[in-house]
Length: 242
Image (cartoon, one colour):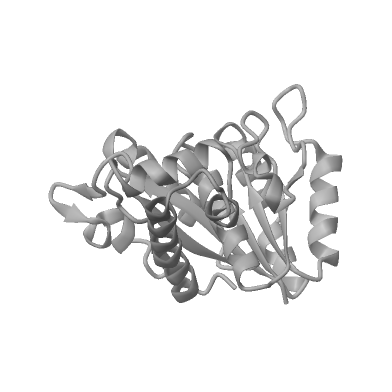
């Protein structure tokens, strides 16, 4: 049985591609094979990580609708896979892809294939909090029981809290917690040290392995990146990504 990880969130720029890259690196760290696919029609950020061998798949046509032939190719790939798959999807195709998956009863089909469908979504702090919480609620309410959910909490733009309540006490979590299999807390980093090191790595589309081998980094740059990787990978281990 393969795990089919699909990253979905209607809000752009919240860390979807980073989450996919983190999962792909975790698979590599564990010496586990994984196939990575980027379907974002606008920003192919996931595909920008050359070391991860991400495939580009154009799911949208010129009319901003799902291309049935390419979608069928994706499902055929899933049906014949011998390893887990990570699929990144852009904000601009969030609605049509979600609708297409649901209307074609793809979650049930994937289960019939013997695979496990995991929908990943990001909730972030700051001005995007309400939008990302709404996106989570839409996904859980629309997708059938065959889909499991992992929620990534990204504090980069501010604390993930509403009226003094943390995520686990918010209405969006309480109403949907029966469907949420895991919560992944992305580390909240000091912007002057850990955050700066990670930001440079992300801007250069480097994996942790590539950054740690970069001769231009100082000993402490590498140490901080190692600590970030350990904290993140421990979360993925606990969440049961593999």
